[in-house]
Length: 141
Image (cartoon, rainbow, N blue to C red):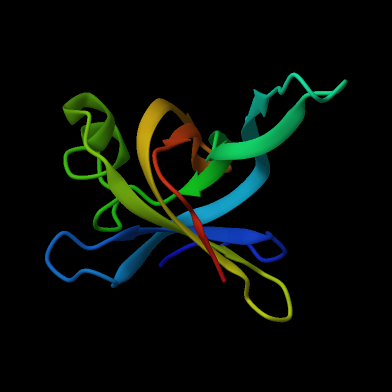
């Protein structure tokens, strides 16, 4: 991908429509925020107990928001075939977040694009503020 800015912590890839498991990097992420990642609990009480018993039921994977140093020319990042199209078509896609750490930690998760705000600046190129609503269990590797 062209114009990667050194020193960023993570990249975002989108899974190919034709080759499952093959991810194309569409930009470098910065200012990443994961919100709402929480366990839903249910409680059970019994007549012979003074306290209720709590059990984890399911995990809500929440949302991930970030600013992306965006390359609109990278397939599938373009305006007509990428994030904006996935949002307007309400298409679930598999995304891959790759951390820039010593073990290149990866999160792979299905999500819907919930927000896409594009900024075009003469000096800094294109950035996009993106929010993805994670729709199923992320794979953390």
